[in-house]
Image (cartoon, rainbow, N blue to C red):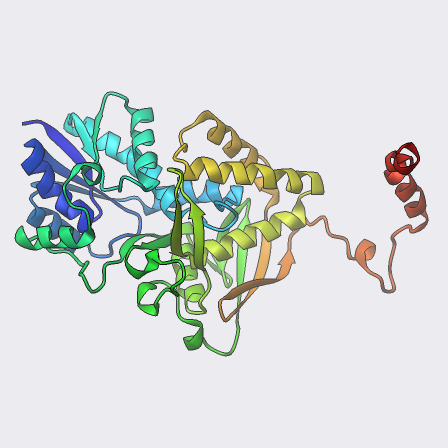
Length: 395
């Protein structure tokens, strides 16, 4: 019997896909689950996969690899798609594609499969990643092929086949979660006029329930890597988890936006990413303290392109790898401490310090101790404006 390795999340779509792949293709279904934050109970995940019909499942704890090899480069790039979305799901997909290929090669499987929809971005991210890493593997996308048109029909199919799933007709949200953030879709959220109900949120507290007293936190970076939270040294995964809890309790990291998907449609997207929101701001603030103007201004252009490449599923492309090298090139300077104020949904940087700081209070101050040579300004302004002096005379 031929084999297929299914990227299995334990959600409605992939749980139905196990049974469907067996029925429609007669394949032996092997499940692969990348544990990067989606599911907290591995035993439950395994039982659900077995109930759906698989006889073998790989559950890999990849949080450390995810943080080190995917989140950190994106943090250095200040990657936010369209200036907002911190790419949580988009960063997880190439990692899944990589291990999906490795599992298929280990099992000598001829096929891989995924539970991405036919009009979403993740189908591109998974399939382009798989084809880049192993073009010989064949790909099956059940959600592009099966007869189900709605999530309600999938729920009925799961019930008929005694497949346990969390989704219900009363709560039909589609949720994808990892340590860098969570994407929440479907149901009432598809109406861009309707405010997301509080029941849709998972990681963040409603502003009405946030403490009236702001909370101050400190984050230490060493060579671009966040290493301490409030003076306590933590590994990257632990630090991200802690920040999700602390910042989420103050309502930080909610995103509600209209997004331009790769496939050409606009979609209403709701995200939660407390730690990502704080760390991206923190790293950007620290780089702003230690790097020069030309570097910072040009980096903004490259950051936008980098975010597009990741969002578009081109993680393994030569350009993305070249940009990784550029963003990594000056991280040795990004060492210092940031102080943030968490206040009713906002994370505000209120303090910065670094041994590599380019800021000089003596030059910036308007008070006693000012060492700035004002007499130099007249000549500077004249030379700066010289190319434009004759524009009116020539017109």
